[in-house]
Image (tube, rainbow, N blue to C red; front, top):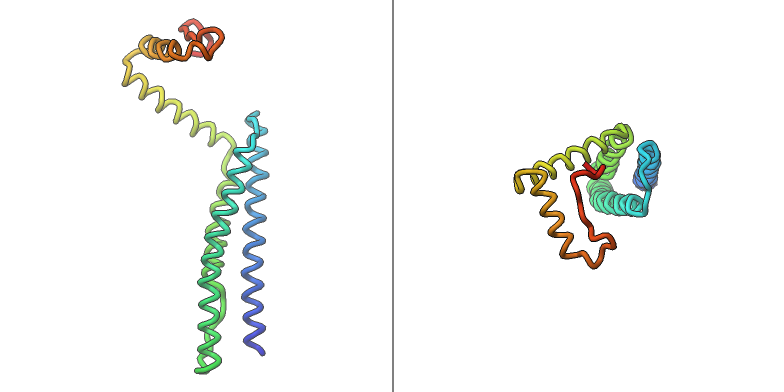
Length: 169
């Protein structure tokens, strides 16, 4: 009967791990919304879909670890019941998954709001540098953009012209 109590305790730990993971994800969601508001960024459904995908990924990983733990606890119970070998029953793999998720989510929550902006600026700079390497000058880039817009002129009311005098540069 004592072993059954230990098994129930392990199951409780595993259930608590799932609740903590869900709580960490919602804390990260809250922090992400707060940071987006701080950057005056529009919050659309894409960000919320990423949260749902994150829940699915984390729970799939944790569930796989829980299956390994269930197998481990079963083996330990079997060894105790039939061979009197007494080993500690702790769901190590589920706790490892919880630790990984906690580390990632806490790191994400503590990440400053301007980190995303800096990352986006680096990506824009890389894209601009690639365009400059490809076309040589800004004038050549503008010509290429105008030529591509000429093909789609019917879809754009003003013809889609780009000029160097616009405030876009």
